[in-house]
Image 1 (cartoon, one colour):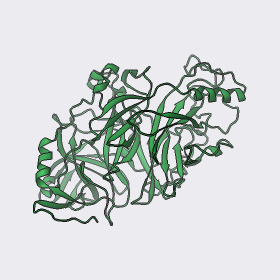
Image 2: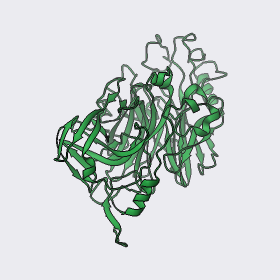
Image 3: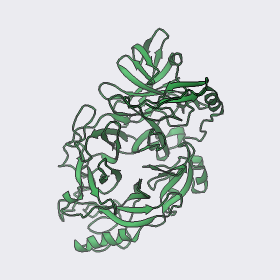
Image 4: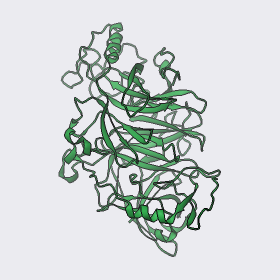
Length: 543
């Protein structure tokens, strides 16, 4: 534990709850506690001066390109976050409500000092690098196919990491043309073949503030194990020609210093590809597809049908638990999207879920960390996944960021499901080393001890049980002064102020101060997250 010196009589020593500000993960015997020093006067001043974010969840009124200075976290899809200097930088997929980003470059980015107020800065890439078209047509020539003069590109899911004294961005560019004819992917152009491959490229910069990236070319592309058999029977067949789909990169330096690219989406699973630390690229790509990576996750035993409904790998290493954590997005992205996590002692697996099921071999992955949900007083959110997980390098706090979509017809808007708001949430770690994601978005609520008497009263509770394309709604739980709980969770309750954990019945819930985003006006409250013994996430907030 840190040594704490009592310098003034008004200093109060408390155990941190991994609060929204001024906290750190640490301690010799705990995953999630640190002794910190709190000045009551400073704490009161922060609380008095706190201003909740006021930007609207429905940003359609300011969604145009001309209003981009007002976006904050509007138009965020597939985010990645890295800190440089005093700012966090967030990069994301080319996606926006009304497609307003089109024609302005690729990979939108913004920055923030506090993870709450974000300044939109523009695009990280001006134009698609020439190597993509050259590489595509060189491959097509070797296969006896005509070149594609004007490929249709997507620009998806970058990941940015600091590597030594530079920053690396791995980005994905899928080609949306049919293999046989080279025509753009439309139903009218369907020629009985699959669409072309995707490419992952690399850019490097010495800092993120300048947005001065040097492109380094191709890292890997989609690979297949069925030779020239790229025929697709019909548009209802989703079994896929390419085995490894080269999109959704994530990057990790393991505890031995090896560099890894983790990538893949929907086709046959998620793979880990070792990289040369100096170049950021593999030594060589050979023996398709085995030379393109080692499969580390898959969804069920679907080699006969490559449509996995699993994508967006994000990988981190937590030295406190000595585990590698693989976060995965499951299901379609407009509504059902949900985030799951598994862990391993090795980057290459096997990855095990909460119940020790082997996700590398195709078991279903639990726990579910985010899922479509709704607290009272709000439409709620759907499509909450494709996350990045990052750490405050100064305090050690962990955070989860993703997009969230509004449900269809919110506020009478038939297109509201295309509204994609960036969500940043705090992560807590359970006593047995699993991450849980807080239910309410991070808002920089001032730190303060949580007293037991504050817990008495009404709460909203959500069990994040899996339900396809359905939001999980909240129900009431009441804690009484005589330590009884009724409603959504029943039994006795107790509170451990040192670890900021509330036990209700058999459920251990991790508390912290947060913002009630559904209230009008938004106000601070107490929130919790936890896991049932079966590995179901529990979310709650004080009413």
